[in-house]
Length: 298
Image 1: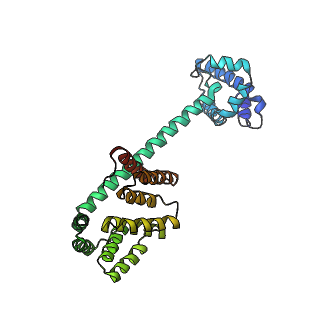
Image 2 (image 1 turned 90 degrees about the vertical axis):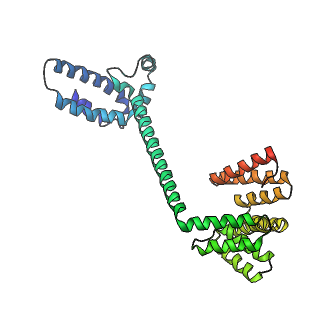
Image 3 (image 1 turned 120 degrees about the vertical axis):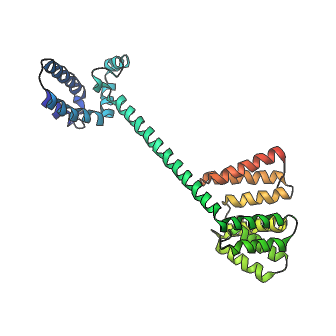
């Protein structure tokens, strides 16, 4: 019986019509082995052979389930019983599903551990960078430069930006764009053009460059009309850039057109979601929510 079972289980995929007969034969083998064990015989070798048979049953659990589903009487009988019975092979699909769930849980736990490890590593790295004297000096000067802008202290702001550059840490594209705008409003055209070139070189695309420049006009010099004109150019170059809609919303907010600003933030969030830019989507939704609740702000 065991030999016939081994032969049939090894050919399950090509002998699908014999599934039920094989399961019945598996019952008989189980009963026979238990009787032999009760008589004091060593059935370890036979049990080892059965492990291979059971492995084939588990690997073909879906095939077995389909065969059993065609037998209405068996379907009713199977539904009335708990699968954790003596003849478990009649419920291989449920066992396979349970194993799959366990593997999924293990995979999710492993992923969570990896993400947590990555977050912890980033926090530690960021703390190490923040503790670096050059980084501290850089951050201090950038902060002082930005504090000088609202009061129109453009020369002072430039001095702080120069001090930040002197730390040896590179300025980001937005800060470079602000410097370009400051030189422009102060009449330093050569310096303004030089920083525009540097900003373009540090931008991902022409549309990003124009958006950075627009934000530079807005934040650095409060030239909102020029900022709006520049960001519109960015959107002509790339109508699908979420960041450009976000910056235009900032400009429109300062110009008092809240309805248009909210429309741009909605468009920004939609595009960011499509492009899987979660950070930008959340940023746009948060600003939109604040506008709807409190009106214009900084």
